[in-house]
Amino acid sequence: MTRARTFKRRPKPMAIRVMTHVAGILVALLFLAPIVWAVLATFKSKAESGRPPLPPWPTEGVSLANYRALDDFGAGLLHYTGNSVFVSVATALITVVVSVLAGYGFSRFRFPWKSSLFVIVLATMMVPFQSIVTPLFLILAWLGLQNTLGGLVLIYVTLQLPFSVFMMRNAFDAVPAEIAEAARIDGVRGFRLLIFVLGPLVLPGVASVGLIAFLNAWNEFLAALIFLTDQDKYTLPVLMTAVRSGRFGAIDWGAVQAGVTLMMIPCLALFLTLQGYYIRGLTAGAVK
Amino acid sequence: MTDQLPPIANKVRKRRKRKPEWAGLLYIAPALALVTVFFVLPVVMIVWMSFYNWPLMGAHRWIGFGNYLALWRDHGYWNALGFTFRYTIFATVGLLGVGLALALFVEKPRPGVGLYRTVFFLPVVIGFASASLLWTWLCNVDSGLFTPLAQKLGLIASPVNLLASFDTAFWSVTLMVIWKMSGFYMIILMSGLQSIPADFHEAARIDGATDWQRFRFITVPLIRRPLALALILSVTGSMLAFDQFYIILAGGPQNQTVTAVYWIFNQSFVSFRLGYGAALSVVLLGILLVLSLIQLRLLKDPEAKR
Image 1 (cartoon, each protein chain N blue to C red):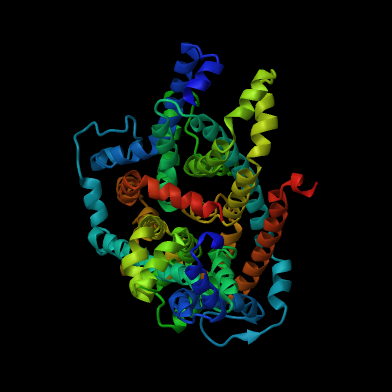
Image 2 (cartoon, rainbow over the protein chains, first blue to last red):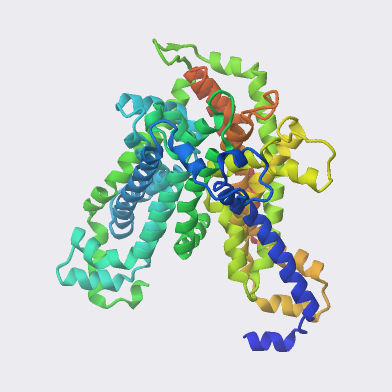
């Protein structure tokens, strides 16, 4: 294939190939620059953080003062990071459990109204969450879940469901029917069939669903802003807007960038290690 | 599919078809419960609430179409919608343009292409809140990057506060969104580009088609579906923009950058007029529905009609 191509096509001159890469590298640097700039600037001293970040790296000695300043805010950095981790991990776990069960149910069973119920689950995607926040606020209050991290988790899980159930149903559909039939003949049915036979076969789908649920919950802002009213309950994005509004009028930009760095690092690390699952989930979700 | 199965399996399948398997409902029950409580119920409620005067404290009162009449005269809302449309147009053109350019660049296998794809996609995975806070700092006139850098390079004589006037503020936010999201559209369009058989381009090349002609008459028609999908995602996402305008600009300067969702947020959760906020949401939902229907027509292949 490649040989046939190079045979037919005139090889591009060296100069053009070099120019393409020079342009590519410049654009890539443009995409990377804001992230790198922010991360490097967090290690500046307090005095240096108030000045423009030129150059981006610390020139007066590396310091962790910005992270310490952020830690002094409210109940401490560990507390708020804990809130964010709890919300994201719980969202990922519950999303995986609920969507694996539902995907299995939709893929392997026949019952009345199955397709209409499937459409209702997918319809969640058509009505954007931003337009139903007002009633959600009241429903959480009725359930006694207003201003709780648990209530936020349930809403995040619901937001993830259309994509996740769709993804898991397709994963179960892709398992050859013969495998399930063979297990059935051996007497493995129902829940045991799901856990021991089919489960291992749909693990890649589970990884995509869990990863995307985690990242979306970690980064979500509007629901957290509306549904969490106590400062103790804040997740990192809401906390950081509070830090940004500043105390006594002065904004501590160093602390803000320290927070931004803390929020970005898990996303970047997870993406770089599990890139394949992320892109697969994204393209599968996009083709809906 | 069924023909290939051995006769016994076939029989099993047929028998199962007649008898409903209620256990399936048990498996989908948790998902259904969540969707009912946190999606179906709120959708019904939003319509119901929009006919009430509904303060946070105290009793709610039926006022018929009162909220919709008030909404009709609410200049703030129509201005916000107008601004949201404007933002949607510029953001969508920018996102699809840059996304397509990046997709064309990273589509063909060449050395280092995986690295390019990863780098262009990186801003997508960081959240909108992080990206907005980062950009607020970069745009700051005293402690940020853009103004001092432009001054050092001699592009401007005196400091310019990017976030103080409408045009510069608008473009700062729109550029942030293009930086953050174009990698996403790159991936969607790239999968479309890669599905075009290489022979098509070879044949056109042999027939003497120029690069532009091949792009216009082969590439564009064949990535119609991913392009339409990208369009729908970008229009819907931009019509619902909130985080970046709330965090970077707080609606300023002079409340000129309040988006539709931002206005609903203010009415519902700052002024606590929950019924009125519901009516505003119903109107926004209607607009989104109409926009999606128009775009779904674009998704349809005109060739299919012939």
